[in-house]
Image 1 (cartoon, rainbow, N blue to C red):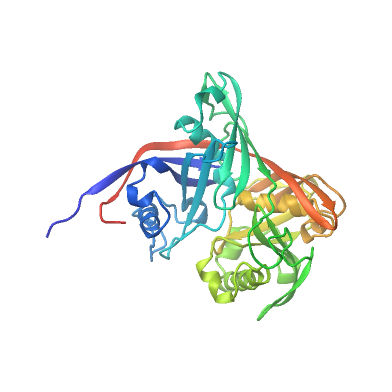
Image 2 (image 1 turned 45 degrees about the vertical axis):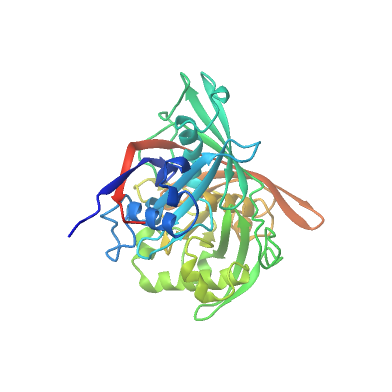
Length: 397
């Protein structure tokens, strides 16, 4: 019996923020995968090693967590005022699908540097020393991200002393600006930042009860609930949630019913095929705890506690897009996030997550009764881990 050989595709494996992913230039993909569709999805599934009933992704580049089961496709931008188009694919670990419904804020930190190093940014825009400003069109959600990438000797600087909780080693700081981060997609509420029209809703969840919830479209659609309302303190680490099958099922039920209220899906059953969005997170007033690395986080050093779930599991740190949602909601008086942080007007918060703390800023204004956030800002870091070719069987797509 004849067997097809493997093919090799130029690829780069990069850590961005607290995530890792396989990055491709669109032009390097096989022709069938250069356009959206079944061939592209099948290729990326095989690259990452999904679907894997063992949940380990041993036969692929994935790391068996939502943070490490990611792919990115970049191309020169088709928009005159942008440098690069960025498309993100969240690959399911145990199911055969790629979710294109949202962005990855963590990997956004690596987009600018990869675009520069792979020749997708005009050389005239790269200084010999200083900071290169890369305008990124986030194609999944139709938004602009500005990355400020440090440059030394005309090359992207990856090493440095910026420390990011959730990442073991320091690296160079990359500042990101998420412009006008509120979602403008279709759905109930006409794509408003608050799709139900309310800062806080009563969300009825069968089997759980009626929960106060702030449902916001900013960075990524997110459902915020109070930790105490579901029996948590907000200081939990991954094992407290991810080892509890009943807890995970409860969060998925909350997420599904919240998605319906936000107009993202029409029926709760559709949530199973839309795992990446919306996110569900719980918040609490500041309190001290020991992070997953053993570092003591003092209650007085943070404004609030936030824990968020991604792809059905508690995230080990915080998704970058969810951090945008946190910063945006914190800037708007009356949301659950704002109230957990003490209420009132604010332009930035530092929140505690399982791996430590993170600071995110947002500029919010109210006009004609509607809230608008012009941008959210945070710092991340990125580093190339490996580059060359990724190989897949020639009949994989």
